[in-house]
Picture 1 (cartoon, one colour):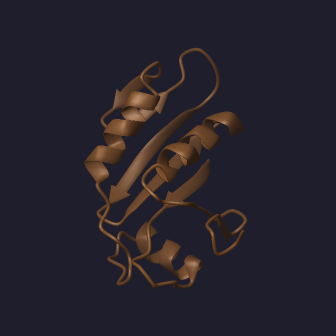
Picture 2: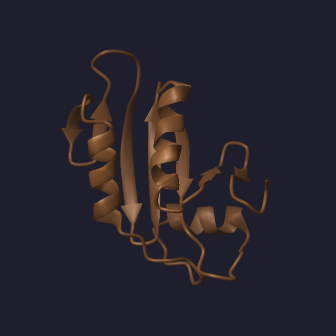
Length: 118
């Protein structure tokens, strides 16, 4: 499994990314993060991956290739667990969340890919 995690800081707030990650994985509220339009984001993912099989409300499987993913959300975050998912698919997920100004935090590295790191 490969984890992708997304959130948005409030204006002028910049916290320790790994501590934010740990709190969000435990489904804790983090002061300084925006409340996300979770249902809108899920609908957008559903639209972008409309040619994938929807396994349940928050899981998709590629019937024409490799990979599957599950979306786990809190009011402040979107976590996507990828299973055998190709890089180009993960990039599409990252691009989709960028539409909502939610840059990727990759806990495997660990790096948050936002303007403060570029």
